[in-house]
Length: 346
Ligand code: NAD
Image 1 (cartoon, rainbow, N blue to C red):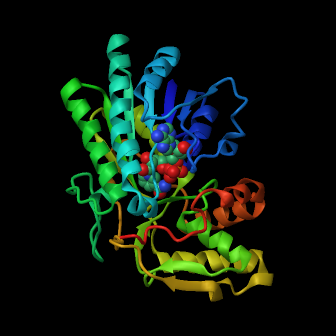
Image 2 (image 1 turned 90 degrees about the vertical axis):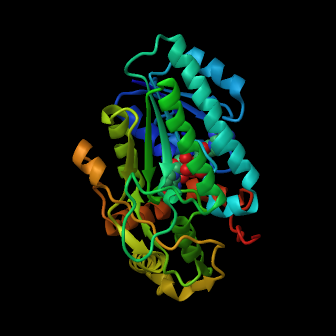
């Protein structure tokens, strides 16, 4: 397959690009290279004849038409987005422009290409979304594909809007769409503004480790390489028009996850132990969703897919990766907004 992957220089997108190339697919990575991007994450595939890069902004429709015409992809995997909830609280406009209008632009360009090439049966438009569109759970229950949408942050509202656009293009124009909604990802190459890399890097530096509120918020942690594997499974075997929830089957409260990371660092960097002495509770995020959990029944039963990495194993691998890859993360600490508390303007 020749796959056009948007956002391929980001955290999840780069994992998908690496796996797709390793599996023998041709990949065109379309990315604007925002603050969240890092082409160093793709150094293992950059020289491959199967890999091509196009710097383009999904807010810029004319650029797409050229890229579709030049590469004639068999499928689109759409991951490009503004992805940080705290930044969406401070500056929602960019989230609407990129996540909503950008997705609209991409759908229109894909539709034009699909129609111009004779509506090939195998064409797919795979939209990658989040479980945050379903809102916040209490102590029990899980999100299924039929859970009503109830987004509560500018980020999740913009992703919900883009999901609706994708389904509408499927229904109205017959574009062969797939939607996946996944839980919180973590793993190597994660930008150092998200919880897990923040904890690792603050602990390594001997600085306070910020935990929002009382740390009781629960997330269903999905190792990024498992997610990339699930996405390629859905792309190749998913039923057109269907939505699949992808979860890690690894629920953990933020505070427990932070303590797990600290314990791992106590073993690997005993000179800084105990790292959990650095935990500092800070003012909560406005509208902070309490709990997310995915019911993975559909993807498991219909596509036979399950995550392979437990949270304990995934955290150990991730901590070791950050210890071994300072050259990857150190320069990112100078990027705009990194290291500052964001998302308190509400
Ligand atoms: P990320 O922020 O690490 O990467 C986003 C990438 O998109 C970057 O490379 C950036 O340069 C690119 N991009 C942003 N705006 C663009 C634009 N206007 N034009 C072209 N490229 C642009 O994000 P991520 O964590 O890898 O998430 C990827 C996708 O998965 C997003 O759609 C996100 O909503 C979704 N998702 C993420 C998670 C998670 O836990 N990280 C969970 C569920 C769903």
